[in-house]
Length: 311
Length: 61
Image 1: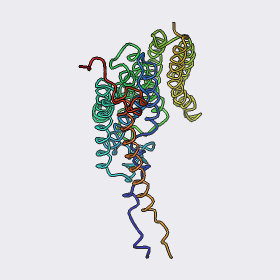
Image 2 (image 1 turned 45 degrees about the vertical axis):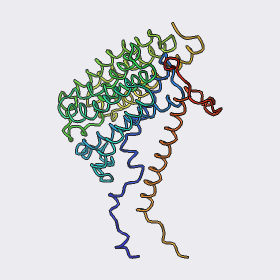
Image 3 (image 1 turned 135 degrees about the vertical axis):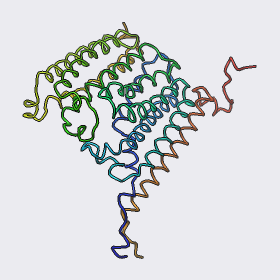
């Protein structure tokens, strides 16, 4: 066989892993965890296979909205260093394939969540997919510096869907879990935007760093961190909270606040000098912050199950 | 017998086919077990013993 015969367009031949990448597996891992917590802390418990199915299809719905986002945002992703190697902008997957996969998985995940659990959970999942793909990706992301603030709702729904899957309704603890992720999202992404310096401006995405400057972004990180604190602490006083959660939340929020104060006290010269060490540390800690809050809720659920921990 | 070395294109196609096959198989298994769980209301042994579906009190004639 000659060299000419074996030549093929490598980019047009995606492997299975490329389709998995399309579903944003790292975001899915956060969705799986928070949805699982929402499901476990709910006062009603599902049978094991139904519970497993609920988490699986919530994650699949999140993956579907990720695929739709990558289809729509391929032009932006191609310009940004952080996203240029994604399957669509790199040419490994055709845009139409991403759209088809996103739509198919959206339908499958919503219908299967309905069959496995109930219509409320399925309706919330459908709304989440719509919100992320249409409201955030197609509208907010390119039109307003508040894109992250409002768009953060899409990532905040999973624990509420998990709760709804178990109970068939939405209650105060579910709303507060939603609010916790919703308020956490802006400081998390604005810290990223501070050290991903030119990506967003090159792509023409009106991130706060681009439209209002870095000084204002630093101030907004502090404001939202302060607004986040009462929400995080309030969860501790609901039936899903308890002393363990509250203790963890107090420590985490104090540490988060210290990080936000350190960010606002710096300017770009200082940040450039240490290659955005403080901003990067704040961003990394924000991931731990969310993980530990929801982890503490799991611990409380375990304690409540043993008749301890509740107020 | 002389086998041609496997080309990259075949590896990628195989990974796609294997991935889709495993995903479909897992979906079928999940649907089956979900159905069993729903029909038996969390007590599969009930069905295995051949006692049929569990009738909900409010749906009984």
